Image 1 (tube, rainbow, N blue to C red):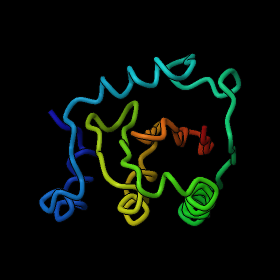
Image 2: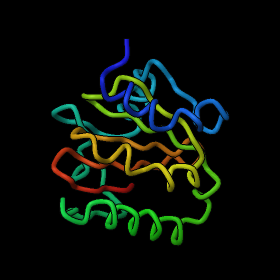
Image 3: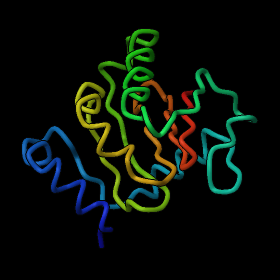
Length: 142
């Protein structure tokens, strides 16, 4: 069964789902397992102090969308190979499903996902990198 947030997300991106631009995975457990395999975790989240990260920023609530967009732009400039990668977006609390799309599609839809108050994970399928926006509005990339 989908959560309230999953239903709202799917309403907002229904055209992209119908067009096949966004795939909906009704079980996100495999993606959490991938995190647990590739990243040290503690208290049900990635332990970035133990893993190490490439980029960190505390995002302000007031400028959240702009700051997140600027970070995505910076990452795609520094790591151009991710621009053609597919991503899996999922959360640890308020959304039950995972959403798969190309990075370029995510750039146009990210605000829908980052407004949900939870730990949000964005896994790059081929490049094995992760963006993590925490409930506390901390942005990690590694």
